[in-house]
Length: 403
Image 1 (cartoon, one colour):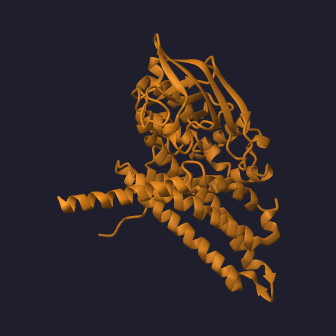
Image 2 (cartoon, one colour):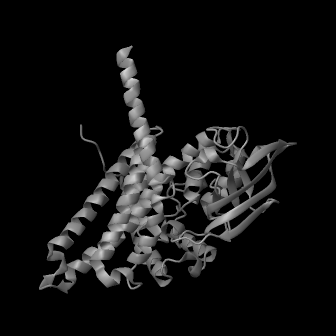
Image 3 (cartoon, one colour):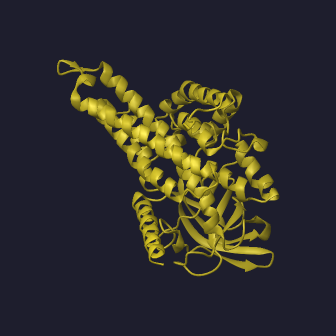
């Protein structure tokens, strides 16, 4: 029996609407500000674009229907998110950018009814932004979350949190924070973390400097955040105490895949621009697109786009089945992060001087996609995890064969 890779008519219509909205409304805004969301007006522009997305019927495709979204599965999100990602500002306009999209997904699965009303509902509607506060300066949690040093201790009626976070995306202007803090054990232990929900105006929360980075299109920056004797009541513990690392997987696997979806859209845009350029540009006695070396780059881009989509499809299928999809998402994320950069880089090369100029968006696309090989787990960490699972399975099989 053949595998059905088609989409329902309603999803096809949403894909088409998203494509039209992104290219006709969002792209001109991005181009005007060269992809820098701070220069474009930050939250003021976000609110304006999101109102337009609602009017176009494309707002929040991932969010639960009861909170104003379309309630799409992971598999159905893929082509919609890809079309939104065709513009760097598209995910902001549709309220499906990081970290809010991942936080919506996690809150929908883990939060209590009261927490959903207080935190999920305004986030899904676009009334607030959010931030996921886990990463810390060395020797704290980074690629190894077990190194978590931010600590939460029990007090009457709740918890007091102290710690220092950095590279917290969207922190400036966030309405609330999801804080990962250690509630048992010591740094290096594999368990003992808990997630806490805290409004941004909670006493003791201070957003520090914006850390300058390559990318400029994620709203709210990548900031240092300080937590000093921050009180969080028991009712704002997200999920169970000491189960934060397990709950993080509810967010991280799908969030890695939605990053792939969005950046695949950006890389397709780069490829489309480059192909249009080489199909018309004259040089060396003919069209550049007729030269073998250029054709190789075009073909390699097509291969990387197709392979990324295929791995994404497998990972989303497994996630929709309710599986952990740890290996599938690690494989898809690692391949995609590197393939997407290759696609954009080749596109720059095909366009020559224009490729590195502001006359085309390729240079800014390159700076946005390069960090994906670092965040959501560096390629090296995912490769280590993939190999560990594979070798572990082989060892178990050998033991079973001997018993």
